Each structure stands twice: as C-alpha cells, then as structure tokens.
Amino acid sequence: MSDSWELLRQLVQDVNRQAEQAKELHRKARDLTGSSRSEDGMVTVTVGPQGELRSVDFDPRVYRELSPTELAACVVEQAALATRQVSDELRTLAGPLIADDVPLEDLFGEGVSFESFLPGTDRREPGA
Image (cartoon, rainbow, N blue to C red):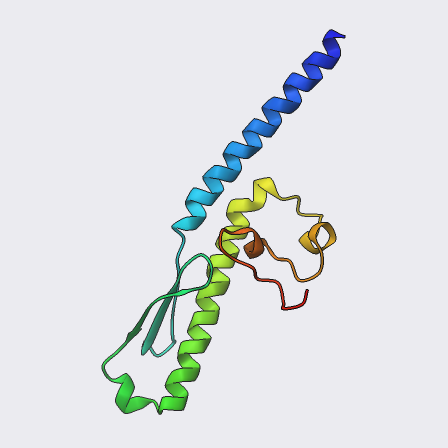
C-alpha cells in the first residue's frame, strides 16, 4: 500500500510542478513582443503575444517613397513577420510543457494552435 501512496505523492508533485511551469509561461508570454523592420527601414511594426499591433513606426521619408498601397502592404507584411517571431518565441517557452511529437490538432481538434490557449484568444477558424 505504501508504494501506491508514494506513486500518488509523486503524481501530485508532478502536477504541481507542471502547474507552476504553466503559470510562469503565462507570465512570460504576457510580456512578449515581436518586432519587424522592413528591409529599407521605412516601416517598423511591433506586436504583442496575441499578434495585436502595439506600434507602427514610419521613417519620415516613407510618405515620399511609397504609395499608400505599398505602405499598407509593407505594414501587413511586417506585422505578419513580427507575429511569426512572437509565435516562435511562445513555442520555445512552451517547449518543456508540450511534447514535440504530438500535434496539438490531434489532441484538441482541427484548427487549434498554441496561441489558442493564451488568455482571451480563440485562434480557431470560425465554425471549427
């Protein structure tokens, strides 16, 4: 019977350790940002951990050098690159908590990504 209690004690310790790791991941993820600057240096975009825009900075020359359509495309491109950077950082932070060989979609259904588990997000496709 003592072996059963020891096993249960170890399981509880493991769960508590993983819960603490998840809390620490959440604290770190909350403060993550990603930034991307266009090759010509005209546009810099910073996003938060959920891909939300935090800032968009333009070099003063941008208005003379790029058309409105080109400027919009550049902002979108830099936002996507910055979001990918944050996503990669989140995966690195979460690495110890998520098995590499188990796709999240296999566990939680189609359209689920790591970002789906961040507070206040639902990154699944509509109707998924």
